[in-house]
Image (cartoon, rainbow, N blue to C red; front, top):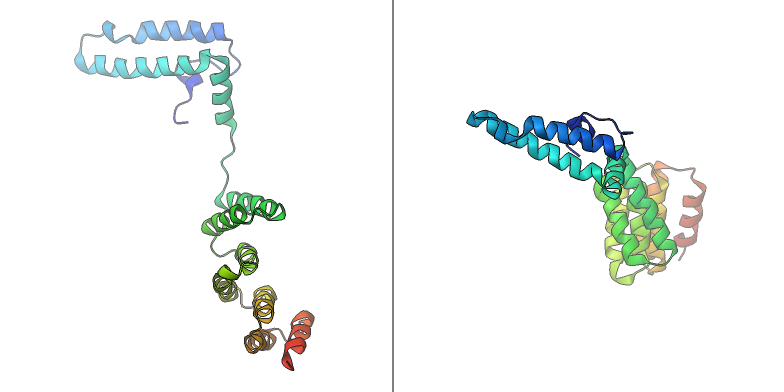
Length: 198
């Protein structure tokens, strides 16, 4: 909200409807355009008069006043907080098996924070469940690896996807590459051992 209607009327947030009306009538009288002969003053008075009327119309009705008061106290969320909210909502949708809407929310979180590996992996995992979207899932896992090469998660996810789809040579390569950077990671070792001899 650009203008503070209480300040415009010279009242406070706890003012009664009667006090607001009294303040409006006084200000409307003092700022009525008909009181001014000079065209520039008249124009300015007209602008103020419209603003005063707008403020009064918003504050005289109980419901619109409550909405206005809520808008004043609404916290402005940072992009990080907003992205987190999208992500949490996506997780809930995914748990309810509303996959399409969950995916849209994951992508909204990623749009707001494109380098957040957690969001990228979540979207990738969900896409990996759908055969028609597995290629996009591979792209997301690769993107997560590029952002954070020392995180085992993207390697584990991509290797698992390749294993499930019968691409064992690719799965082996993913695990081998990851083990060069993280040689003591137990899950990477275990997964590599599973696909090594197949």
